[in-house]
Length: 78
Image (cartoon, rainbow, N blue to C red; front, side):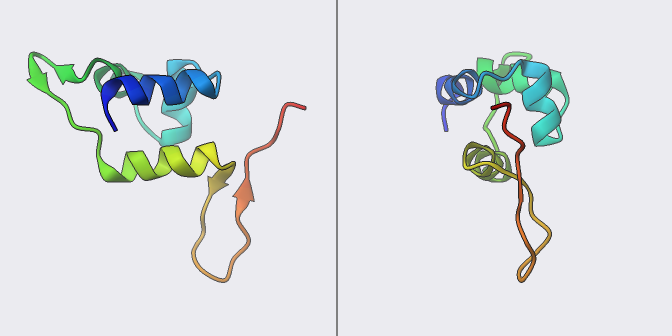
């Protein structure tokens, strides 16, 4: 996932940086680094765990408690 893809993911879900950080369990500043692709002039790579979490959130999964358990889905605003 490239920085532009990450930002597009967030915008597609209509999430603010603060909301995306909350859903991913990160600080808002990390969201900014991932979207910019750098931190203090150094390249920042989006970790696999964050990329997978983005996928899960896109699919409506809010939490995962392990196998044989019910998935917790995100609540819809509809």
